[in-house]
Length: 191
Image 1: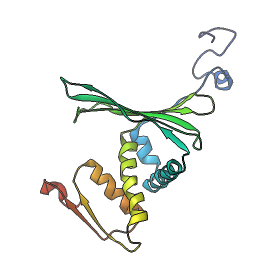
Image 2 (image 1 turned 180 degrees about the vertical axis):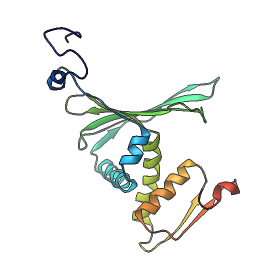
Image 3 (image 1 turned 180 degrees about the horizontal axis):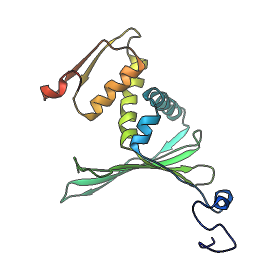
Image 4 (image 1 turned 120 degrees about the horizontal axis):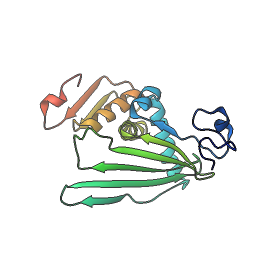
C-alpha cells in the first residue's frame, strides 16, 4: 500500500482518488445514539423475527458464548460470534460484564462481509443489545399472546424490562402494564 504523499497512490483520507482506490476500504462506525435515532423498534422486531426464522431453517451459524473471567475483580469478557450467509454478514459481539455503572463503552459488535471477509462496521452496541432483547419479547408476544391482548405483565424493573415494554408497545396497543419488582419506586408510571 502506498504511504501518504507517495505519488503512485492517493495522498490520504479525504483525497477523492482514495475513495475510488480498491486498496482502501471504508469501515462504518456507529454509536448507540445514532442507532437509536435511526432505527425504529418495529424494524428491530422484524429483524429479530427474521433472524430466529433463519436460525430455525439452519441458515445461520453461531458458536457458544466464550466467557473469560477475572476472579479478583469479578469481571468478565464475553465473546459471541455468528454468521448469516443470507444477511451477507459475519459478526462478533463482545462485551464486558461485572463492571456495573462503568461510564465507559462496554459492548461492541464487529461486522464482516461473508463475500470477502472485509470489516464492514464497528458498532457501539449498547442500544442494539437493549433493543434486541426487547424485540425478542415482542416476537414472542406476536406468536404466543392472543391477538386482542392489551395488558402486559412483566417481572423486573431494570433496563431490560424497559426494553421489553417499549418493544411490546411498538408491536401492539397496550392499555395497561403491570410490573413486579423489589423496588416499588421503579414500578411507578412514567419511569
